[in-house]
Structures are given as structure tokens and as C-alpha cells.
Amino acid sequence: MAEEERALLGSAGGDGGGGSPGSPRALPAVCDPRRLPHRLLVLALMCFLGFGGYFCYDNPAALQTQVQRDMMVNTAQFMALYAWYSWPNVVLCFFGGFLIDRVFGIRLGTIIFSVLVCVGQVIFALGALLNTFWVMDMGRFIFGIGGESLAVAQNTYAVSWFKGKELNLVFGLQLSMARIGSTVNMNIMDWMYSRVRDLLGYTGPSTLGLTLMIGGVTCLFSLTCALILAYLDKRAEKLLCKEQGKTGEVIKLTDVKDFSLSLWLIFVICVCYYAAIFPFIGLGKVFFIEKFKFSSEEASAINSIVYIISAPTSPVFGLLVDKLGKNIIWVLCAVITTLASHIMLAFTFWNPWIAMCLLGVAYSLLACALWPMVAFVVPEHQLGTAYGFMQSIQNLGLAIIAIAAGMILDTRGYLFLEVFFSACVCLSLIAVVMLYFVNHLTGGDLNWSAKKREKLQKVAATEMEEQERLRRQNEDDLAKLRPKADDFSLRNKYLSKLGAQMLVT
Image 1 (spheres, rainbow, N blue to C red):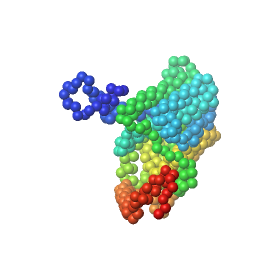
Image 2 (image 1 turned 30 degrees about the horizontal axis):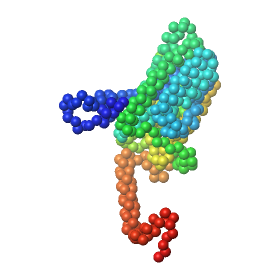
Image 3 (image 1 turned 90 degrees about the vertical axis):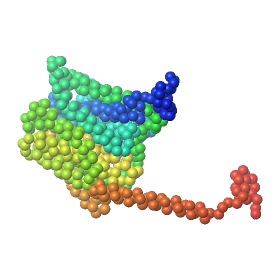
Image 4 (image 1 turned 135 degrees about the horizontal axis):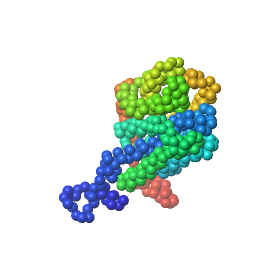
């Protein structure tokens, strides 16, 4: 490390010739934290940091038939696997950033959360091996504790290593890698189960447990990335004398009482919309097998198309919304498209690829247009609370809806389930329309074009600079009006500090 520091901090003014044998040599580009090749290596590790978590999150969806058959559970019990993931994050969304900033630090925090993800997946697999479903639930609970907090740590690393215009691209690449993890899971776990079944010669809890244990190798891979990333970040901190990354989140629950109606409508849109996406994907594979008579491989492929489309389109839609603005209009288009997709799946036998592709486009568009709106309606010092609350109620909604969806499917069937999901999207649509009118009546900026928003931001910045200039000028004028202290008063002030008796004039 000392040699590396000398290489980075050594004199740049030395001659470019052979130099003395003891003179420091420049580090290779891949080892220099300031150079692009090294930062690309760090970016790759950041992206793979969440790969294992997203791969294993949808293990139940990829193996729905096998889980219900081998563990002899109904759909409501099966969907509880997703609910148990969400329950801890109803609370942890408020404290994930605090734990990283104040307790663990970004490096140790990332490693701890990665270990929790690995431990949760192992317990989940052991529950299947032991044919004990409540152990599987406990594994998903522990997995959930690490999963969402690991995403916070991943974003913190990104902010620490990349700034400005690079950051949007980095976030887009991280999201794309997450979707790739989900897609690979959807398309490989069924095949993996078949290979394990052929190896053991039978189906059952042991086959399911071993398959889930093999899938957990991806979590070990992500843990390895966390360890390497911690080393590289620690090394860069020493070499560049930079501070350890922090989330910057400030959580104050008392801020909730100051939330505007627009923000509460954004929360409603978020909960109702995602309630019709993630639980549907969790149950989608069997839906396509039973209604459209797809094979298991075809059902896995179409059930993953939402994630496949999201991987490349999320950065593109993010750039589009940034350039054009009009966030409410984009959210409205996404919600209407999603409603059309669910209606097509519920009431028609049209090729489901059409509806699922539309759903994938709408899902990507809504994420890019909805989440940034929070920053437009709350002050900067309340952003941590607002985003924490939004994620908290999203997880609460997903936990409740997951269990409700399982119960509806057990008692009513897929048609009623699709009607239920369509009703959730309709509630989201009503909230979007209300948000449009509330924003219009209150003069909000949620639906401004990007050019108008940029122009008004420049005007506001100019006004703030002018106010600051006037404040400083007033301070200077007041300073000139103050009487100057003479030698006698300065002497008395000095003696008073020493405790001496002051002279009376």
C-alpha cells in the first residue's frame, strides 16, 4: 500500500526518462482508482452486488408448481413466501440508510447485508430439505432483511464512486443487471430442478431443497463481489484521501405530517400499481400453463418478459423523461397500458405475448416517471423520509396483496384474480387523474416540460444569488455603522476577562 501511495502521490514533474531506480512508477490503469479501467471494474462489482439477491427473490415464482406440490401447500401459503420478504422492509426502509451511515459504514454494512441474503437463502433451501415450510418462511424473512438494505448500500457505493451525469447511467446499469438476474432465474430454475430430479431419481422436498441450494451460489458470488468491493473502496480511501460513502439520508418521522396531498397521491399510485405487477409475476407461470396451455419452458419465458424488456428500456425511458418532462402524462400512459394488458389477459385468449410486452414497457416507463416526482413535491431535507415512507408502504401493500392474491386464487380462480389486479390498477388510475388536477390547481411543477422546469430553476437560482448578495451587502453596511472600539474599551474588555476591576470613566 505504501508503494501504491508513492506511485499516486509521487512527483509529476520528474523527467520522463529512465529516472533513478528508486523513483516511484505510475500504477497500471486497472489499479489506479482515478483511471477509467479501475472505475469500470468497480462498476462491474457494483452491478453484480445485487445479482444474487434478485436472482433468488423470484425463486418461488420460477418453481411455483414444484413448491406447491413438493411442500403440499396451497397458493395462499405459497404467496406468503413473498409476504415474509416484504414484512421486515416495512420498517427497515426507514433505517437502512441510518445503519449504513451511523452504525456499520458502507463497506461493513454491504458485507453484513450480503451475508444475511446468503443465510436467508440457505435457510430457505434447508426448509425444503427438511420438509418444514415454516423454516422456508423464516429464511425468506431473513433474506428480506438483507435484500432491500443491500440495494441501499449498492446505491451508496454508486454515489461515492460516480458523480454528475455518470450517475444516471450507473443507476440504469444497476437496474438492468437486477432485471437480468430475475430473468435468468425465471428461465433456468425449472431446468435446474429437472436436472436435480434426474440425478436423484425422484421428486420431492429433497429435490426442491437441493435446487434452491444450488441457486444460492449466486448469493455467494454477490458476497464475493461485496468483499472485493470493500477492499477496493478501502484502498481508494487511503490512496485518494477520500471519505467513506454515505447515503446522506435524514429520516424524521415528524415530517410525515407536512406531506402534501400530491405526495400522498403518489404513494397511492405506487402501492396500487406495483400490487398488480409483482404478485402477478409471482403467480404468472401457472396462469400461462393453465389458461393458455403453455409448456413449463414457454410459461417461464413469457413470465420473465417484463424483466427482459425492463433491462434495456429503463435507461432509455429515464433519459426520455429527463429530456421531455411531463411526468404525470408518462405515468398516466403507463397505468392505462397496464390496465389494458390485464384486461386482455383476463377476458381474451389473444396471444399473451402482446399483453406481456405491453406490460413490460409500461412497467419500465412508470418507474422512470413516478419515483423522480417525489423530489418535485417535498423539500430536499425531507427526501429521505419521503422515499423511506414510499418504500415502506409499498412493501406493506405487497405483503398484504400477495396473501390476498393467493387466497383469491385458491377460492375463486384466475379470472377473479385478474379482475382483482385490474381493480388495483383502476385505483392507481384514479389517483393519477386526481394528481393531475391537484397539481394543476395548486400550480405544481409535476407536469412541466423539462425546458420550462430548467428555465424556472435558473430563475430561482438567480434570485437566490441576488438575495445572498443583498444579505452580504446589508451585513457590510451594518458593520460600517458600528462604532469602532477605542483603546480604552478594548483594555477594559481584556481586564474583565481576567477578572480585574474595570475602571470607571
